[in-house]
Length: 440
Ligand SMILES: Cc1cc2nc3c(=O)[nH]c(=O)nc-3n(C[C@H](O)[C@H](O)[C@H](O)COP(=O)(O)O)c2cc1C
Image 1 (cartoon, helix red, strand yellow):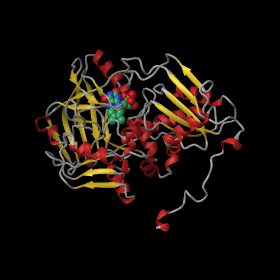
Image 2: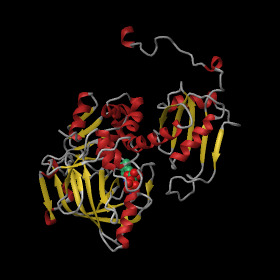
Image 3: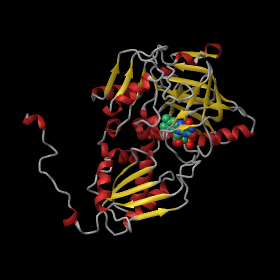
Image 4: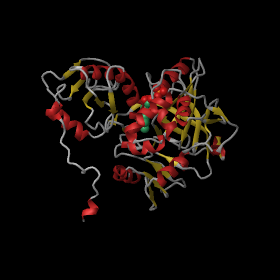
């Protein structure tokens, strides 16, 4: 049996990382509020009853490194290494004749998006949004598949506003279609195994197929089924699939929407997705992701941590890389061998991943997954007059109306070389393994 969303839910349930909300919740604000209130628990949240819909909702499948470790069958600090090892061997997905996502098929006049939970996340959002759909499309010249995540605003029974723009690959593909006067066929799969969601949030070389990566993460071919109304394939075990077209030359107002930086992106003239068919499981589970949540950050961080890890491994003995809690900054621990080496490490990280704005390099005894520990290292080990690497006017996060994100700062927060007698951290023997209950 192919691993799917339900396999993941069972895994999380058996590891006590699953919360069931039995009380009916309003999808407008209340559901996201419960998610926000519970995200620090590091548990998936499953809403059995959502007002106005027959479908349950799940959220926060990978909102912590511990949850990702369960999926990758490794330790939390090894998740990035596991990712790097697995994606080295891409595997072609496999076409199958049918799958659970074909249990119910609705076409044309039967299509009604409003049967799904209309989750409105933030106070100033333009309305309900689909946030956990992976968007499948093809380059019109090469036929190469692309998979990405794009926010979609509910606009009617068959209509969604969708955000896409170059240099993101889906935006490039749509532009190519539009130049030919062609509508772009898309299929959006909602309720996937996290490996598909993770690769959809990954930037790969243009033309590379993200599903060969998720197959690599699975260590077996992802099973795909043909769509009903468009020439595309989608995961056979997805919960729900929306099929349709993005119309050439059509733009409508979309937004505002509370985005991954915790700000509202303004109203924009964006594309329109007309849904022509819906296929789904009979008892489909609807999935949402809250932008800027721990789940969203981990989703965006992992593949980018891998990119940075591989690049800095070429210049130093890297121990760990962390892009949480914000993917515009990173913390890297190394076994320092040369004075000045941390600046090379920061430069390599900036080169590998353009959105990085800050990079703090610490010694191997600092836990990069704990910002308090990194802050401690900065306060006690950095030397501001010589330990900073400022890169002015480089390339950074592209939507930057106030020109805040185009320069970079590397911070060397490592101790002076060969001075471990002065900088050895004190240890209280036994404190880490002690159980306070034994003393009560
Ligand atoms: C929850 C979520 C929502 C996202 N929304 C958008 C979006 O609306 N537009 C966009 O271009 N990228 C969005 N992204 C980021 C892209 O999915 C990501 O950059 C991906 O790598 C783009 O893939 P592509 O270059 O193959 O199109 C979102 C990511 C997440 C996790």
